[in-house]
Length: 106
Image 1 (cartoon, rainbow, N blue to C red):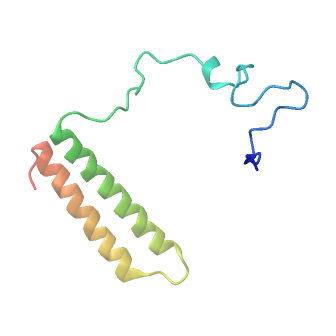
Image 2 (cartoon, rainbow, N blue to C red):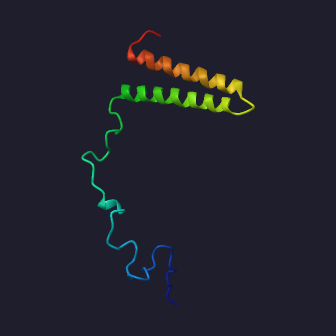
Image 3 (spheres, rainbow, N blue to C red):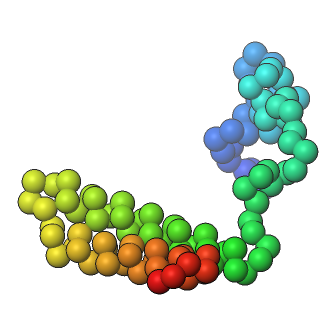
């Protein structure tokens, strides 16, 4: 007895066109290939190439995330002060690291 594959979602031909969705030609401005391409595929926010720049960005992200979490802990009616204090200390440490990388006085 031959094995007949079961149809899966997205493989049936469209009832109006008779084309399979994966092989149908793109149409309309909403299709991704209709959008204009950028000159730089990764855009202006591509990954930094210098290790020092990566460390600087990581320190900034650490400070930002820690301050966001501290604010989150303080927003609730039963404010979690120990956690907010811990996150604030982490943020200050990240800012000190960032300041030291920039060459400022710590």
